[in-house]
Length: 285
Image (tube, rainbow, N blue to C red; front, side):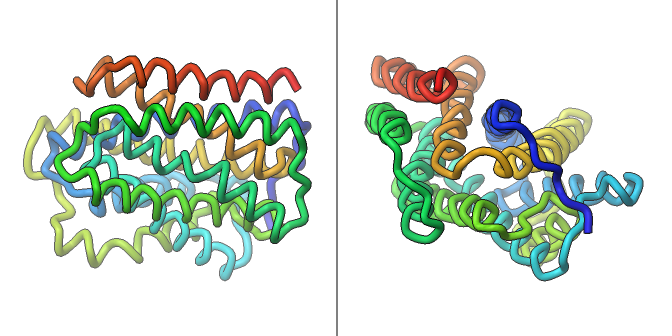
């Protein structure tokens, strides 16, 4: 069985941070696709998993990130639920708010779950990082929403956050969570019937731009980012990882303001600053 080699703590921090930034950029690409391609959230997820599974299938067998079939199925189901709900939250609540709510549940759910289920100690350093992170998220959530149905978007974001926290706790608890061909294929097969009913082919926009965006979405924020993330979890506690992942909403918020015309407010600036302060505290430690 192919597995990720254990990595040093600092390398784990860098791996998870890189994954978080990639996810933030991926959320922006997904928001662009939802606006311009005629694809819905489920169809975008299908393309994302399909591209990732195809890329892994074309690699030499030693690089596919294999594992037990049951673990691949569970990982794929978790990814399907969390990512489909996340893209729905982006569509209905906007990129900034959808991403922030999704990731904002991470520090709380992962910290409590790690303490109650895995026996991870809640250190003063972890609490000191989580508190300003939650304060920053509170400010960001108070900012105006950019989507048409904020309440539905927030509900989907909470579901996405719960799914992501579950994957994190499972991987930290010894589960074989892997960015494998089987996991991405499972996610694709789970979502394909719903995508077929919704429409799986683009109906608008520039075909070259849409194709490039789907290819990027399936490789960098999906295939590579999840491999970085699960590799980093071999060295980084779940609570620390959940705070580092807050780089994702900070990245998404900046992109949403600069390129997607989402509101720019004092709450956005202050909230992002608190998030980055929490990450800096972990990096110094």
